[in-house]
Image (cartoon, rainbow, N blue to C red):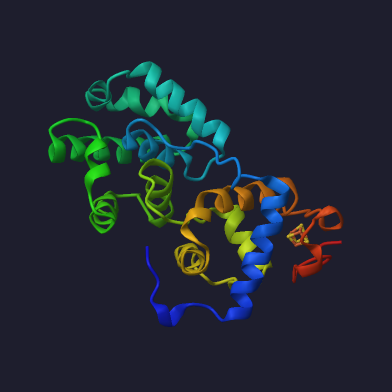
Length: 232
Ligand code: SF4
């Protein structure tokens, strides 16, 4: 999750990023009041992030609650693939996601002798990334979420709101991949700001800088936003 020094963006871009993040913090305050997004067992965060793919938080949370109601022990989910798929239906793509979850549970059991990822807390970050990357359907965003939220390893996940916002700020092009946006933020933003800044941008994307009708007139960063007023 590191970027080479030669890839660090120019100073004017870095200054712009810091200025924007400061204004977002004044508005949304998640750096001062960081939300608790981690879980007792990082495995829970990993499964939740798999469920969240291509759906919203509400459906993800419904699916996860149903999953744990149906299978309080992960072992039981492995013995009932049809029940696993049924339980997570609210999250959509239930056959694909249930296959991915079963694969994760199996591999975790094989690797640790129990279905838990507590052991990752003692691993080096590079080893954790390599391990998580070995699962089908677990990509850079999922890995960054588990690192940041569950393992407190610095990483900057980029979801659809952050990708849209980053493009509107002209910090990335339409073709830039989310994982390259993560590297951009990780190269510029101080690590201790990652969690709060990540959540601030998501809140901004949901609250003001929405995909279809951004509310530029009431946005506190309109004076330094390259996309301000383009949506009227
Ligand atoms: S000024 Fe408009 S486009 Fe720019 S960040 Fe604010 S809401 Fe988004």
